[in-house]
Length: 480
Image (cartoon, rainbow, N blue to C red; front, side):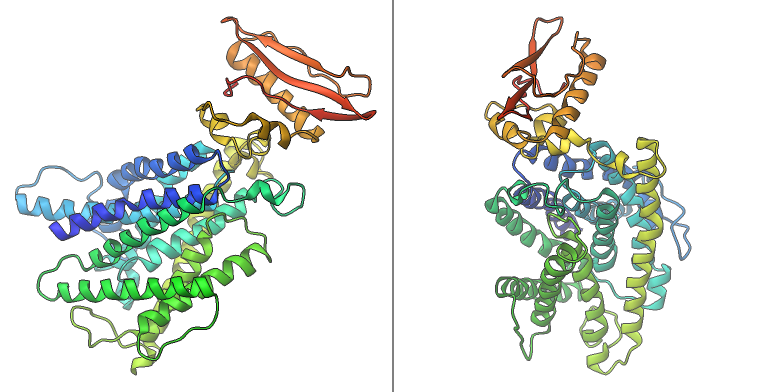
């Protein structure tokens, strides 16, 4: 049980790795938003797993589709040993559920409403728990067919990756990402250093993720754990080399290296050439390729390379070891079942939540996304605007530059600021100005609140005889 607990603790540190990776690929000024989403994965995911998730995944009694007991499991057991074993398995499986949830966080970075994501963090654990039951419960319907999924290729990666795909399609790309209305510099990655730090944290944690899935080191389980450790290092190293050179590379004897190399190749190719360039899928961290596509290959690889002679593992021989197509067939069934479940369970979630917030059945996206000014005017200053955490080193010149020549954005900002001022701070505010050639060189509109704070909202200026707008948000009180 010490092995399982230690592995679970290592897996939970992956939240830090995912957060650092997401911060690195996001635009500057989104750090707090990214960190809070990863925190909420654990906050809401833990509650969802305790009250519902564990019971659905492993509760007793159960059928092939779901468990129907052990919801909000009791802390009292007649046998202390049974209690320890139960909660050891519980915390380990919770770490898997949290990982599946956080995959979506980076895929929809910088554009999903924070409240919507919190709701998703709770709901996605329930979606995951059904798949976990199918694959890992003794009577799960995929387990009965003989599906072999040692460490979550299907329930964690394929499900999380395809959920990311659906989330991106519902939320849509960032403003101006593919239509040419914003410069490429607006979408520049903020910190390669954070990306590499996140990579190293995740790499170390994956060893705990995979080796811990042996569920112990007694009897023959230690053989499984040690083989898994070597395979994880070989596969990840080969995948990293393939990612670096992005070219052909092969080996004659090390199947882990072949699997890792192909996994890296299909992930890199699908993210860059298919999702980004062909179907314009705005996935900042490449979650769909790295998780859904690579997981699909990993699940198929079991049907190709599985070896029943390995001690401690019960699996049929794969195609390349003389086992025919039987194991490959059930592995493909797992892929189809998980993708279908993702579509059936997650698509209605985003549609219903989007409609509930937008009150427009024809435009659920409006309810899922950040408001127009929140996303567009603060591409590098989202944290002050969304989470009210203004820092002294915020560069307001970047904000000014971004909206300098955007009349539509100027008018939208003014309307939103005035509305929030009236609703939240009870200020006396002027009516919306009109932009015309007759405006003075600087027409400043100020608002004063009860505390005596003057907030200069906008300057409107005319340049070169033509109407042009320039927005300046000069107050450090960004939350209005």
